[in-house]
Amino acid sequence: MLPVVSQNAIVPTDLPVALREASGVAGNVSEFELQVISRVVKHLDPQCIFEIGTFDGRTTLNMAAHCGAKARVLTLDLPHDNAPVGALHAESGDRQFIELKAVRERRRFLGTDVESRITQLFGDSATFDFSPYRNAVDLVFVDGAHSYEYVVNDSNIALDLARPGAVILWHDYVGYGPAAWPGLVQALHELSADPRFRGMQHIAGTAIVFLRKPPLPKPDAQVSPRSPDSTQPEWLIADLRIELDDRSFSGQAITGTIEARNIGAASWLPSDAAIGPVRIGTRLFDRRTGQWHMSYSRSPLTFDVIHPGQTAISRFCVPSPLPGEYFLDFDLVAEHVAWFSRNGSRCASVPLHIANPV
Image 1 (cartoon, one colour):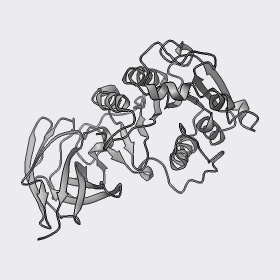
Image 2 (tube, rainbow, N blue to C red):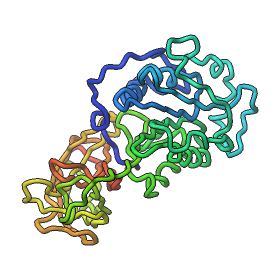
Image 3 (spheres, rainbow, N blue to C red):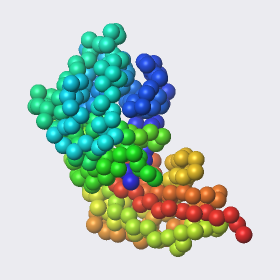
Image 4 (cartoon, rainbow, N blue to C red):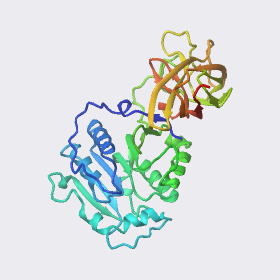
């Protein structure tokens, strides 16, 4: 499962957007997802956007409408007369959407005031020549074929297209429960372990995954003479192991042991530090309602400095939620600085059953 992040941690939620063609059809992003994508575009102010997978152009239209007048949006789709088979394996669900030629040919951006910003490209992403756009794109939106093979292919292409500091978005990721596109989920989970994709996050309430490619260091940047620590957001990475005392509870606190190994490059300050103390933080996902409690609890981790390569072992005590079925995500947080998962550090997730008290 990818770390979950709220929309307001990525982009200001009060940033106004004016959706075009808000009503969607099967195969489109949801209206809320369209708002999120539009806010990312407006906030990022990209000069070049590349979309892999046009479909009917609804997302294309809205991305073009929320970027600057001089920006360009490149969008790639299979030719309308192409057989619904690409160079790589495609899922049967993908083939159904490819065959909806009447929908795909509509292209919702045609005839609009932003059509001039959009360039429609045709080809199979497995064989298309992306070389003219390499390292030149500010925002890449990956929403093409959903098979494992195509997602891996398109993700590597996206990283190649993205300039330093650019944003990559993927659609149709489901972190919990049955997934419509299991190959996509498997591919993104595997890619998230690749250092090149470190920092992938699932935006809460959407099927969108977000990644910002690291920017190049400034030429005049000075390296601090002191060793980095948890007062700085960089290099905060942990490997977490959780052991619950029990998996089924009925009102009592949730207790257990956490083993946290420092696999980053910064020392973790103890829980009594004024700035940047590293503590255990949890997020709670209610499987019945689909709602997140993004900052559910805090527990002390250590009263000693934990240097890179060292391990902290600590007991924790988390308040019990109401009876129900949950996932409890464990993360580390440097208070007033950053959650570790923002850096691509993996959360430890455990299922919980909270029974009614006898």
